[in-house]
Length: 161
Image (cartoon, rainbow, N blue to C red; front, side, top):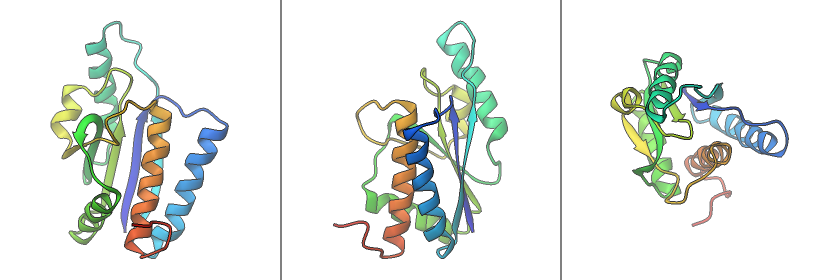
């Protein structure tokens, strides 16, 4: 099984956004189990209270790195990162699992972005697209794309080409 975790700065508020996120997590876990993927966990950390943007990024990066699974593969979400089609993202997840990766951690930084420490340790930087997304919505989009990747792996009809 390849465990997947989302580490995020800030809290996804209760209500429709959290329910939608949880819906995709549950769907991923049901289908993922049969394909050696999961569980999918979310860990939320408070935003830094440091005065400057650089100090906030550094503080958040340090705390995120402490929570990251050192045995896994660290993926930093960043608007300037690599973009994948849903099919290519599915292939990336499948390849990672088939290469024996035990865990993959997706990291969503705070409003100021990622600190240098996290950027150095991330294996890749991933963009969900060129538009700026609120961090809560980025979690939902990421959870949906993880579910979609699993449906592609399973040859489930959810994804249509």
